[in-house]
Length: 84
View 1 (cartoon, rainbow, N blue to C red):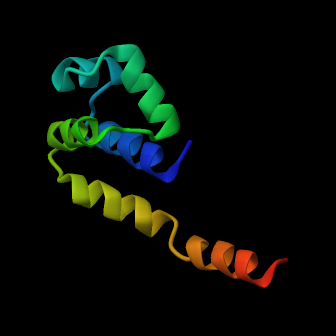
View 2 (view 1 turned 180 degrees about the vertical axis):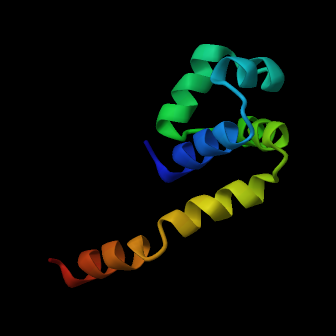
View 3 (view 1 turned 90 degrees about the vertical axis):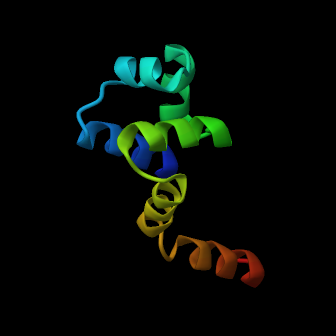
C-alpha cells in the first residue's frame, strides 16, 4: 500500500464511509476503488471524487501523503547519487 492509498483509506475511515458506500458516492466501480485503495494508482478524477466524498481537497490528501513520507525522498536520492 502506498502512502496515498493509506491516506485515502484513512480519510474514508475517519468520516465513517465504507469502501462499498464510497464506490456508490464516487461513481468508481467497487473493484476499481478497492484496487486503487490497495495501490494508490488513482486517476486525477478518482482522487478528486474521493476527496469530495470525505470533505477534503485533492491537494489536502496529497499533502497528507507527502507528510507521511517526509524525508524518504532525500534518503533515496542520496543513495542513488552516491552509487551505494
